[in-house]
Image (tube, rainbow, N blue to C red; front, top):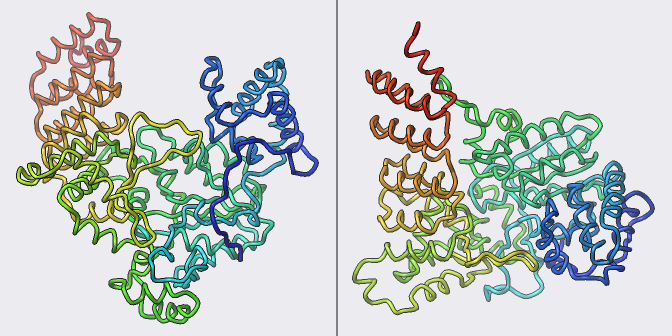
Length: 583
């Protein structure tokens, strides 16, 4: 079995190519020669060069440069290879255009012969593939020298998953998606499944520059006998407002039925609510958008349910393994309701820390829970949390806090427990990555799920919504506004829609009109649609006219359309013709 220890350290300098003869070696050798001629700069220096070259499109980030030069990986995009060539050539005082042209040619030859991914014999670090770390000797109850992962206890879903692996081994491309709540062992089950594949197979985990972008760009380069690792599959298939997720789903469908690329094994994991969102049929109402059609067809027949708890038979098998690993017996004795994997990952301790937290720390955790439930992205800004947490404290609690109350609350939440992350931990940028202007924090997955199940956003304090308006990540504002609107919180929703518009999201005004219309506020809806049309959102014109007409205000509609036509709105004359037939 292939199993690994600590995470590999990334090199800061390029090593001489080690691959055998062929197009990939030619590509690497050309870059290595330029790298030496450029006086062997660090990857951070090269990334800084890229950011300063205004005509470089795209400008590769440090992770792309490190993967290409330090890890000897072929960039997923030809443009990235050419950009790296330009940076090196300029440092080496070479002709940048000529060298970029050469690298483009070598990249194309390598892409046609080198499949994506790493040989499975090199895939030894489960944590790099997002397997959760479990409690370890730092808990003070276990001896040193235990393997990084606890001994594995097979359950019925493992046998189901093995059938997909067997199908791939027989030469047929297939896909399996493990469905279960947070920390139930989905990713670990996938890790164990690939241990049964021969070393001649490869594994590809698309994450750079973003999960969906990487998948869409690279799927055409997948060769036979490859595992495509899609942990948190919804990140690849749900990309609101962009359509990118549907294109990824279509590309995966094409991959699975392409004989020249077979066999491939696509492995994914997903929470039940995301699975339900992707496979749900559109509503019966006329005009309902089928926003996940490709994903629904892709996922049909791929689901493998992973229970949240161990059954009696599972626990019997666990006790059979306990002699090999004391962590299993410890979990069996302390886990509630058979939730072994959650305990091993520290979930019960997370809940305990939350429930027994001092007022300021509890307020901070609840603000983070509500922000995630409202639709904010995983990375929660420092300013948002500080402004929101204050509103969760009573006057008496607030008056007793010291000046450094927020720093103390952060420290309480960040402290690790039983080998797992604390409730709220700072996101540390990787070496060479650009740092955000303020710290960002991530809420523990189990607490996020717990908050969704137990808390009601309608009871969130007013200050919480004020903090979102002022400090939430700007691209999230429209989703946050929709979330408030779905809960009947019209005033916060409209403030968030306004903030989204001010942040450059023009369609937010139309979305506000639709929310008001659905809530029965027709006059306000018309006003927002008209406001959206005034700034060039042509789709809002028809919505406003339809509402005016349906409510018997044809004269008002005609007057408004006449003014819009006078101002040069190209859609207005057509609507005038419909409302004034024969004129």
